[in-house]
Image (cartoon, rainbow, N blue to C red; front, side, top):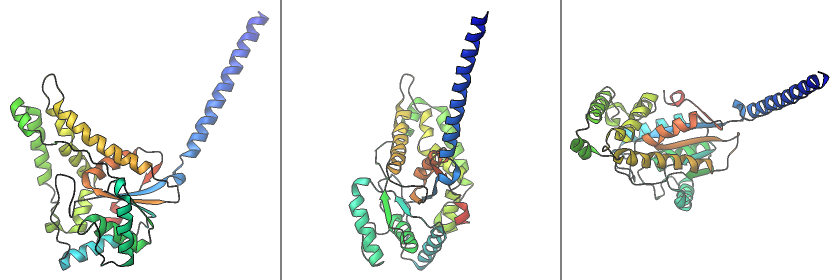
Length: 280
């Protein structure tokens, strides 16, 4: 009987030690990810103002006086975030050109750069100049994909796809994102809401989950390419050396911002700031 009791005590002691050690590991992990150790991030989704590798862009005449004032207003508002790092929709392989253009802009705001007329210069460079930001990086990763599977949907008579598209059109009609009608700040405010993010991911990717043959995954395989592109953009961000003292501003197309918002909101490394605090 004494041997049995001793054995039970030994097992119980070992189990308790393991539990204590496990609790200690949990405490250490919690300490490592406490809020004040996270990197602050402001995620700004924009419409493309100039040339883009994406399928769509928006005409925005930045040379008009009204546009200049709108851009100035937005830049001054976002500059209040005081970023130490700015990330833009450019591929890392063009980092040298990006830095060269940024330096030229800082030396002379009227200097011609490789990013004339688009958001990298109009927003990224100017916010960087206003805040004295030294570090700017490109995080884009381009992958071609065909997000228009309408012909296949018609061929398959994919009812769910067409029902889905009707709902997307209805939702789109309820919000005016036309910058010409509502102005730049309002358009960006509306674009950077969870409802808009969901719509952008749905219309650019998830809708293709309803366009597949009986034995194939034609639509979803195309959507997967877009998911892959955005995950790789996030991976490019994670390759950049930064710490809890950094404040990271991301400027990218609305759909990329929508994906990044999801990744960042689930991260134990980053802490998202509310964009509406700055735009509203």
